[in-house]
Image (cartoon, rainbow, N blue to C red):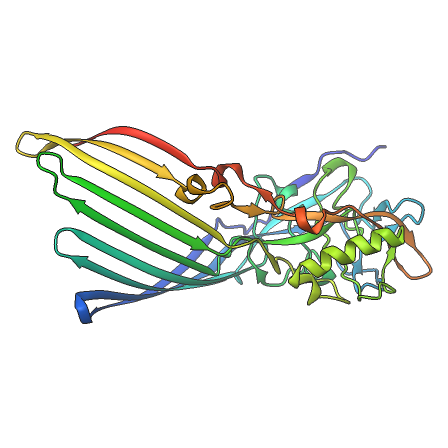
Length: 373
């Protein structure tokens, strides 16, 4: 009898929808020069978050290879294809949905506000955030959420450890200013908003099933959760198809501080980060006239999004790797003598490793007529 190709999704009888506890503390203080200062602390704890387990897989590793990666099956020396050790061969992947209570995050925000009479107001803030989770759940279906959750440090995919969340933005700066210009019969306001923030984190992964846990497999193509092994500079602790591939891999490693720090190990998830992003938006609003004693107001609105990119095509660009993870090594065999996969380098050139997000990197402009009532 052939094995069904579709994975099975089940829910623990005690499964509960996500629940969080949030606590905040804020202090406002009037400062010199008539400024208002605010400091706010926000803490979030997951009481019932979604956690997925692969039930049709041996629950303890059958071995640990020379990379330090826990193995849950075997790899074919000829082509690197994985054979997971299933609890039953009558089913493929069986993903169980249960709950955990370990995820947490906190944010600290400091803000200054200042109003200069009726003509100008200014606001500046900085937020520091830290977010840790077991799995970031980036997708809409179970096999993707489990299969795209990187296995930290070559560990057990069913024994997740807290790591940097895919959604963490540790540093964010926001500055805005509004000038009110009293033009007779045409009151006008001009607003600029600047936001600068850290890029989102990501993970360098492997094209193949390095730990033989069934991700990826033919019936769920593209779900890859194995983080690359980062060799020592000598390269004697990794098996590559050629010296050129090792040279190319080392070049990428040297361009990534997160990989340099991880030499000789399998990194944790999301230790690499996309570049800092700057954005400047502008808005001009011209009040035309009011009706009904001010109850009905009409105004012209002109918005310019990503002014920096309008000023210079090289500015205001959002540079990211492809997705939340990117494959840079492809498994093509297994080195039985050294107990590790054989890799082909499949990653980008260090200079071109980032792509541009069109939706965030292009400037846009819009005109509108606004009616307030």
